[in-house]
Length: 469
View 1 (cartoon, rainbow, N blue to C red):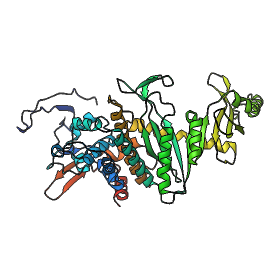
View 2 (view 1 turned 90 degrees about the vertical axis):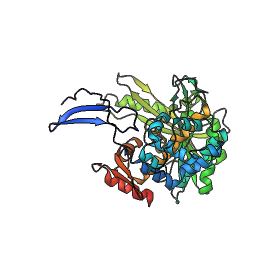
View 3 (view 1 turned 120 degrees about the vertical axis):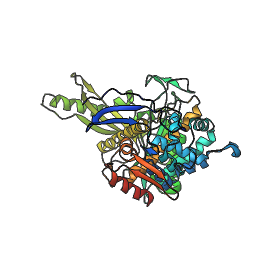
View 4 (view 1 turned 45 degrees about the vertical axis):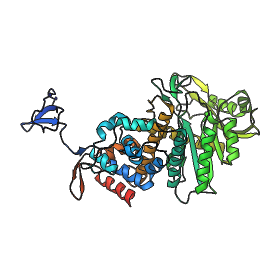
């Protein structure tokens, strides 16, 4: 049945305290009854699940720790919103999909957000509006940001299982396209855009659980800048809690260079890094490349012939390297949809003793899942929302989004025994956070009457038990 034309009626019968007009939206009748929609429900929220994010924050103490790392220069007599509440409000909004600070002008009075930030939904003052949050973004210093980054990493390390003996660090960058006059945005020829290049670090424990550990905003022409400092801090924090832990770094060819390799040697950690091809590497890997070409010539006329690839291990020392290192070679014949045939050799440098070159390359290819985690951070949590002019303000924003990612990760971990065990952030938000509720504040209690038709009530309850148990 097609919708009827939406009509707008100005309400003249509302309470005198309300000065703005309320629009009505008419829909097709149901059971001979007119259907009219209006935004006049009162204390109703569409984000009742934000209380789960608040419970996750209480569980790991993230926002209070972040606030403790920021030096508050405001005059105490003029403060209406303390730092912990400001930080929590911003992170809760991002977790619920409101990445723009302008949304806080309306969300500041949302009853669920107020309860999530420790305020009564009706009797206490509203949360901070956009100007207050924007002033906070532009007030932080470099030292504040450094402390915040360390605090985020500490909270992630604290979540690792107590019996952890080894971890895997995956590091990569993402394109953060800029659309204005932001400080230190430059044109990057590889991506073909004016952008930032945030550096993201993920840690994977022995259970396979991946957690974001750090995000560092960098200019659009950064290369490997910031990698060594980030690795030193991450390895230091891990070894403080787990003195004998085995640490491995995994990254693509953009980080397989002398600086990163020497840093890994100095930190005494394992590494499995992609390596850009060159004339010497191709010459040293002539044997496996010839083998795969011969294999292809023998199989190419067979219907549905298998993929032709060969693996080998060679010793290689670049001119800038201080020693020879083990390089895994994968020689493969690829066929395009148009029928073009290409020899596609790939190289991986490592100091690990794999059972076979094929096993080592398969381990390297496992880093492809980190691309999914970066997309999750960028798309589901809008990690590229760096539209401030000042670079430091944008770094603060990136850390806020990383904080939201950490809290959503806590919820994902709590939901591992449910049908959301493999759900990404966007799905978790839709199923658990976007829950409609009517909120009633009485003298002694705040009632949150959530929708009786919510399809994920059982999952919601299980997550609640884990977060508050």
